[in-house]
Length: 558
Ligand code: ADP
Ligand code: MG
Image 1 (cartoon, protein in one colour):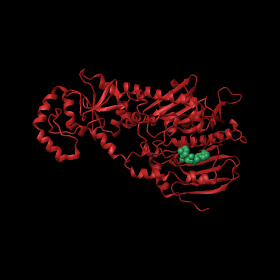
Image 2 (cartoon, protein in one colour):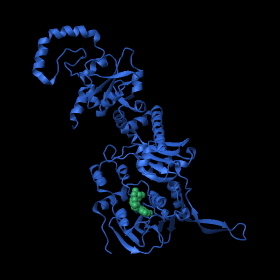
Image 3 (tube, rainbow, N blue to C red):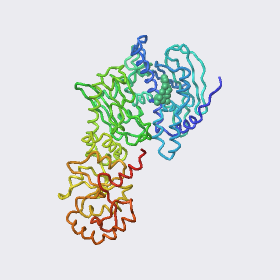
């Protein structure tokens, strides 16, 4: 059979990946084991809904075999297997073209974060192997096929023999070079350690032939070595473990193994609830914004498990939109396994869990804000916009969840402040929370409208995001203080000088009338102002909608 070429872009991506993505070569094993585990999950899940299938726990396992002489490492599973088409489709194309197009546009960005979201796990094997052979027999099929590839130059598929359903992947491990060491991936102790490190919680046994020693028969001090098959992983999922047993690295590894992101999580939240609804959850707040986060393609959601079995990859009902950046999983014994999507939405237990998770996330963010300001601001710079959208989109409904989490840049300390910080240091005579809108901090600094407020010694919040002003309009007030734009007609400071400006108004009436005539429809009226200090003129708005808001509204497609 003729050798097939990888699709052109796959070839490029493959080369790029082999050379750069993963910082550690050892994770190839994690990837292959997690694919094997997924394949067994698929049979397990099928058996739940298909009466002709039985899932007998003992016959499902993953087996790792190293052969030093032949330099091969084999990972076999008893999972669902792949048909010829699946071998071709799943292993023949690496990334969807959409993702690749994105990559080339953003070549300059840090490749690590972007590639992690492709799902190129299988190909990581090429980091340590120069040849891969996959033999697979799909569930319900009589035929088995062999897929072979030596890397970027293509692959070959041909029929072969295999008795049982499942997949066997054989890696021909690279020879050591001067700079790189590959022998370790054939070493029993090293392999055991890698499996323990990354795949301990895999729910199926990962077996391996391990050398043990025992006293020689009839001897008291002479030992002999023998081979014995051992299960390497403890099979207890990380979320069932006690927090005290787990290290920050365990959570980081889990985050990476689960492909929640390629960055390190900024914070993890481990929840164990043992009340009327029992559930365990591990949630993460990512450090970096996923590349598609602010696009339509982004799908929020948490993985949903029912008693250890994955039933939904992205359960969106578990997260409000404003927390859509949260990654992670929820496992509950109280959910039925073959629950459908429609029923799920109605599910009381699920609603309870969602509510509970929401308040947990809120509390964790609040404590991050309190205890680690720097980290919080890092988080806020990535996802603050989403929180502000949340205030706006929910019509202020979840105001109490969000109002203490949002921050704005302030004129006083030239840094981000919370509304609570602002209000708590307001002078007694200050009636409103003042804000100014503009494209950037620098431009707002130069706004003539800010002069009077600033001179009074009042702090001004700088709104540089389109959503800012819309969000606070939904909030209406914070701790009974209303928000006031510095460009609004009535600033609540001008009263005392009102009379004076009236007389000036008369004096300059002719000039103002002339200006109005020239400007015509562009302005509503021309008036004397007391708020100006060093600038000759400024624009103010009348009514609820500020000048900046009007700009945004006018720019919106109807
Ligand atoms: P991902 O796991 O993120 O989908 P991978 O590159 O790891 O990406 O795997 C690609 C696809 O190949 C999988 O989605 C799966 O369909 C198939 N696959 C890989 N390994 C196995 C296996 N051991 N058994 C069955 N299917 C597999
Ligand atoms: Mg995978």
